[in-house]
Length: 96
Image (cartoon, rainbow, N blue to C red; front, side):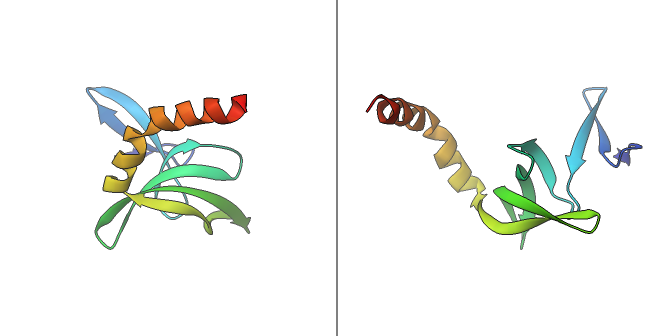
């Protein structure tokens, strides 16, 4: 992988170049939920974690705050497998 001019890393997948965004701590940014919240993928003590966390700016860098949650891959799979049930519950909740 090499770095693009905007600080994003470039990777090749099936011969096509894709851009991957990394935060200032080196965590892979999966998506931005808002201007201060993002979903990242990181390694911590040999464990891969999916984190949903708020970020704050200090100087010219952004840092993850304590506000958020980090899920192991097993926990992420449980949450993902229950997405339809969560959607159903949201609809019931909204109708009451």
